Length: 640
Image (tube, rainbow, N blue to C red; front, side):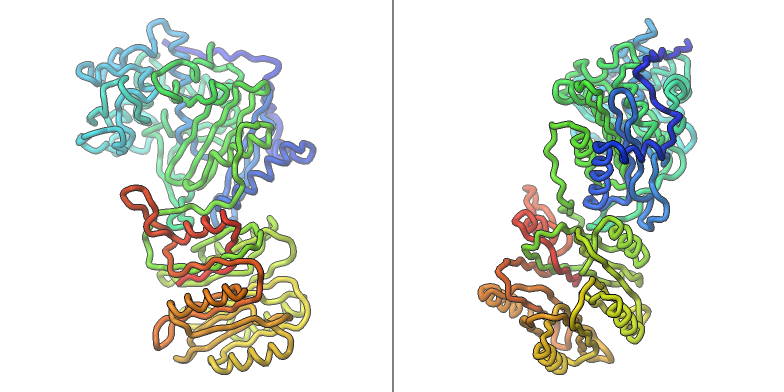
């Protein structure tokens, strides 16, 4: 039987499909609320270390905002726009629920209370599997496993799902069910809750045999076409995005999702996702749309293809792939029928925080969401690097970028400069023969120049040029590239006397420091390196009263010295760890200050958790968040 959806067209539902995306995005020029949305999203992209995102907002039956932010990759060559197509991931589930509930409403021979085996000829009609109902599939109470996740699946020793059973072609229900049909159930149908994307494939198998229609064709004919959702399509081919590993963004490619189309395989641009969500809010897709989030299923919050919170005042669904996150937040309890839609090309991102900050900008008062920069307390123990850092009570808004390639670090620096961030501390290192960079960025005004990968003479010339332009070197870095020494520096606006000296022996550097102090210059940055087999020093001086410099201390000696200095009112502004013939040594520059400091050395980036869930050992991320919550901000970073 061919089922056609009935779309109720109301005067209030004007989707403005003829309005170009640029106009939707530029509405911030006249709408202060939308302007705040732009600010919030841009702030979150930076503070969550997200390459890019797309966000849409619906209100009073219309799309009032649809825009892209950031870029598709760390190279920042291709901006994300409102037309960028992305995977919906599990937001596909509400779409599937609409199709099945519509069939339930229109076909007397089909009900979500039916057993799957009443409609699916290739599903067992005996045993526990034969007792599964379509409603249990839509509410995740069937007992079907979720990919290879065995949580709430005691003793499951069934064969692994056969991911090759479907292939990468367009969705085929029987092939999709073949992936998991031999898996044991995790529990008796209806007795418990276990989220399962596979369950939605089985629900669609019932839909297709009962209706005689292709599920994918039905969606295109009865949802996409009437709503003018023109970019909706099956997620074939590769999808690019990112995940976080040890505090570093790593590109991730994800393949075709047609094998799980009903539960996680649709894709479109952000505007078209908003059109679908708006239709849910306006009740134009079903005779009783609220049934999706109001009908009792035995679960506390998951209803029929969607989550329900706050007594039905908010309905939502998110989506995750290994390189992205999505979110659809609907507020049917509000008089303005607000909806917020989010796509992020990073699996590590906090999508809820972003969506809630957008909702707050649109007038939702439910949320009290932090806007601090996120440094995830990870447990990835890969790599041998150790980190040392100094925190001071500066009041600065600080973010960290870690492990970027030479080109990507330059792109990120430029992007952050566009959004009023600057850096005065960076670190170069080599990994598998490739030059990489870490950096600390602060929110603030004023210029910032970065010059890297210069020879000794080239850097001296660049330093002079920057001085003539009114810029002062604040951090000097040296490193090896293909056996050749290279130099880099960060510059900030400044004036007055100023000096840079390099390639000095330990004793000569001490003499030079005394000379500079007598001339009214203070040392603010040091760099230790090996040249022709000998330890050499570089330093940057600016106008001011000199502090203290101590070098060539062992780990324990430096710790004792630091405690003495701190007790006497001297606080670190720069630390240096370096190798000598006698082993690892430490150096530090102190200034007289009433503000306190924190110092941690030789930590892994990520910590680890014991069997009780306690952090042991701590990572530098744990320390960073601990000190930040106590009012300290990162000012200096060393990668060992």
